[in-house]
Each structure stands twice: as C-alpha cells, then as structure tokens.
Image 1: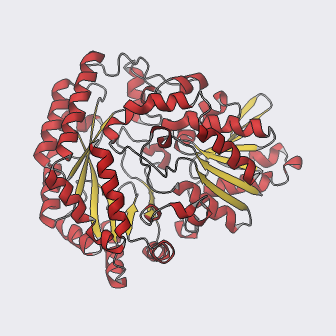
Image 2: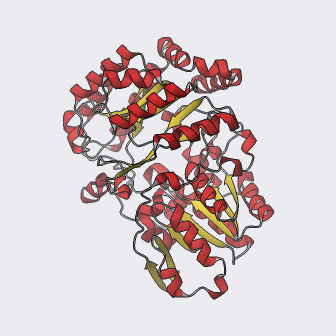
Image 3: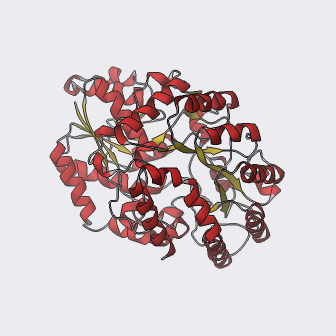
Length: 499
C-alpha cells in the first residue's frame, strides 16, 4: 500500500528552529518498507529558514500558531499538495499534546481531499488520551496506542483488502482504538517488542527532501526504550517502568551507517536516561574507542547515576555533552515530583562535570502545583550555585498520563479533558489548565506572570555569558573541523538567539 507518514507543523508556524528528523515515523517507515509497502515521510515541521531559537520566549509566539489554525496559511496548502501529489491510500499522523490541533487539522484536510482516505494517528498524546481523541476528532479512522511498529504494520496488512475486512479481524489487533458504527472499541494493549535489534534502522532516506537536512540532523538515535523511574511530571507510565536495550553492536552499526551515508559526526542519543545501565555504557564506549569512529555525541543522564570513571570513559569515546534534570532548588519540590535525587547529588554531579571537562546542560522548571514564590527563587539561586554550561528553564505544563496531572485535577488546577474547539482556540500552554487565570495555587496569576518573566530574563542573561558561549563552541570544535558549514549554522543560531 501507499502510505504517507506526516509529522505535523508547529515550530515552523512561529519561526523556530526544529532540529532532527521525526524518529518515530522513520522507524515506522522502515518496518513498512521491509514488508513491501511504498512509504513517504513528510516532516511538515521542517523549517529551512528559521529565525528564532530562544525557547524561553517560545510561548510568546503561540498566538501565531493559533492564528495559523484558522487561516489559509501557505503551509496548509503545502500539506494538501503533498498529500495529493503522493496520492496515498493511508495517511499516518503523529500527535504530541502541544501540537495536537495541527494533527487534527491535517486529518480534516485529508478527508476533504478524499473522504475514503484512511487516517491513522499515533504518538504520545494518542497513547495517553486515546479515549478523548477518538471522541473529538471525527476525521481519524484508527488510533495506534503505545509502541507503534508492530501494531501499525498489522493494521495496514488487515486494511490492505479493506473491502473484505471483518470486525473479527480488527478486534484481534492489539493496541488499536477505532469506531464501529456508534461504538468506540479499545482493543487490549500490545506487548512491548523485546528484541529491539529486529527493528530496521530508521528510514531517513524516505524523508521528503531528505537532502535538506544537515549531517547533525541525521545523527538522532536511541539505544534503548523505556525508563525505570517515575518522575511525576513525566508520562513514563507508557513504558510501565521497564527499559529495553539494543545490543551495542547494533548501535555501532547504525552509527557507521549514518557516517557513511550522511557524513554525520555529531550524534544525539535520546534515551530517557542513557547511564541507567553502567556496564552497558562502558561496553558501548569501549567499542566506540576501538572502532576509532572519530565522532562526538551527547546524551541525557541523571545526577545520581554517574561517576568519574564512567564520565572519563564517555569523554574518551566522544561524549561532548550531557543533559541532566536538576528541576528545582527545593528539597520539598524534589520529593513532590518523585525525582528521587537530592540537591547534594546535583552539587556532586556539577563538580564531576567540571572536573572531567564535559559540557553540561541543567534543566530546571517552575510553576509546579504547591510551589511557592520562595521555592522558585531557590531554584534560581541553586542554578547559579551549580553553574551549568547551559541552563534551561521551562514552565510546568500539565500533560496527560503524569502523576502531576492527576494531582492538578484534585487541586482544581487541571481540566481532565478537552473538546476539539478547545485545541483550536486555547494556547498550547493552557491546553489542560482549568483556569488560565489560576495556573498555580500559591499566588495570583499576576504575581506568577511577573515571576515567570523575571526568571526567564535571569536564565537568558546567565546563558549569554561569553565564557559559557565559548565553552559551547569548544565542545563542538571537532564537528566544525569535519564540516565548516556547521560552524556557520551555529553562528546563525547565535545571531537569532541574541536578537
């Protein structure tokens, strides 16, 4: 069958940089192609000429996104033309909570082109809110919940001769949600894929305009799936606190493939927490060193599962960046979000990063339920004490599937469900906020907005330090030697950031 997989536009509407390719869709495409289907991946959010990179100011541009949902923006014309040009039998759309409205809009465009075209949705938002999505989006035919490769493929195989599809056949497909007349049917969940090595490498060559991506964009990879932790702001429930690993040989093979095909020398490992299995990380690093691949890579970690020996080995294997969630400067809030780390561990980790000499990013957040003004100031003070090479600040947004989402409902801060009109008319930062004039329960909205502005300015000023900018450039110096164009690209980003 001819299958078009679409990553909906969002950052592109508001002029922001959006890096990498849609990894989940590339995995789906690889599995489908292996079974003989004709597949095209359309990254509708790919922006060839971005102008903004300061994500602390991202929310200020949300009105532009909302406006685009209601007007005849050229991007929607491009979406329609791409669908018509490829002429698929099935359109698959990924759905994330922040840009759910864009996904729903694409589904409506598909049905206007051809009401018989099948629309299948998947992704994090569908997995968490499938009951809501199937009710409010009349243009979707099937939802794929959870891990999508096996489910999507089985559904496509059943739909291949859909004139003869029987309800019994659909009911046997685990992990899908669909309508049958006026009845909503939620089939049982599908078991996780246990051997991740059987999944083909992401089909990056099936990206529409794949030549427009740079070598670093093509360096996105995951070496594991799942997370054993249960931070209350994160929707880890989708993984049931289990983690599965690809073999290190399989990971090395994918890295070599990206080097050979795209000239990639800077990779981004997007595992939820790369250093959970210390022995495996050391094994992978030893193989990277032995292969002399001359690459750099960054990863996500936790402050409580690193040590000096491990970091030294990672650096020797090419690690030039580590991102860790510090979150807050309050021990009480750390316990509230079930982070299972301490401020002392964060201090020790910061000292380790400095001693080993690896560029590190600290992630912080504010606006959590019950968080006080004093605790938010503690976070700013703690950030300045730790001195990360880059400090990222986000304002808490309630996402379905998280423990804090349920806590927010109990506190009267969170709306448990939304309508289609809500998604089209409410700013994404308020999608599940019950009352936009009461985002937190410890201060007035005016006080919170003033504090939010103050915090964002402080973080931005901190990051603009010449020393920190120089450290960032130094950490990427090997990349610049391989590809001078990447240096020019970083200079353009810097100029966008300081505007």
